[in-house]
Length: 198
Image (cartoon, rainbow, N blue to C red; front, top):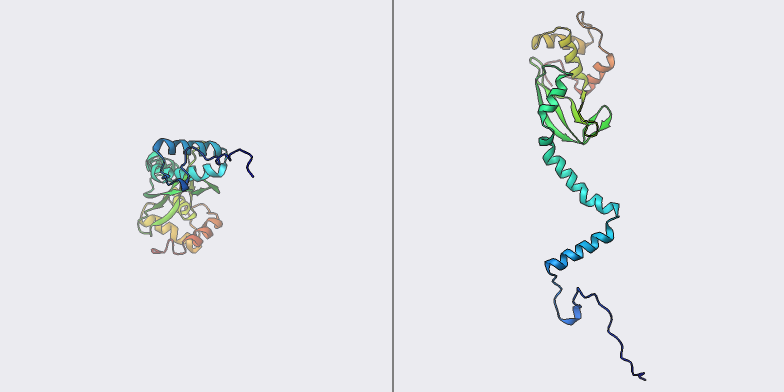
């Protein structure tokens, strides 16, 4: 039963060749670009898409360029304001915590102390990108060493002669009272600090 009308073929997007036509599905570079542009235009307001795209790029940029954009020489100047003349070594780190806040980039630093074991985790210097400058967080064992220096104990045997009694709980005459919480935190962090080994 024919009404004299032929059925129109199913519409198919012109940019694709139907699989049953025997043609191939390879797109030209221009067609691929148009497809990508149309897809991005459709999904440009999707926050998850931008998280997927920009997240790895941001992380890679921090990993590879943080050391060059924020060189350790800048961090050293900031740390020297808190720990003057300390013999330090650095390791760049991502998302460090300073004073209870997490930052994007910074440095962990250690201190070489003659006649004492090196203090590998003396603190962190975190780059505050929003406000500019560095936030320096000094660990408790480094605070004890600095207190000994400020009290006039010379580097080397003088520092070790100051630190060991403090860690043993013996008061120092030349040294003002150190907060017991700092000593306890240092012992928790490094039980052998001041004993000449780790």
